[in-house]
Amino acid sequence: EQLPLSSSMVEGHSVHRIATQHTRRLCGRSYKASSPNGRFAEGARLINGRSFSRIEAVGKNLFAFFAAAGQADVVMHVHFGMSGRWSVEDAAKAAPA
Image (cartoon, rainbow, N blue to C red; front, side, top):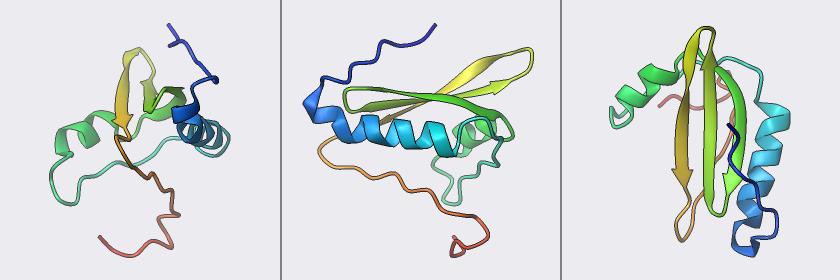
């Protein structure tokens, strides 16, 4: 079931733009997930190797869906709060963590 989308929420316009960009650039691919500082170890384990199937924006919230054949999707929720940032980098060009 897809979450309702609302493009009329002024406060979330940046979040909707990120969701649109991520849909174009990232969805449909599988990724390796890790937690260099250990704070996201369980979450990284749950999404590691799954396909990033879709992302949805609701207000200042992003919901990223990770799929695996024959299994329920894992959903990662991100709330940007008063200020927030989400960047995407090529792992081959990223500085070591």
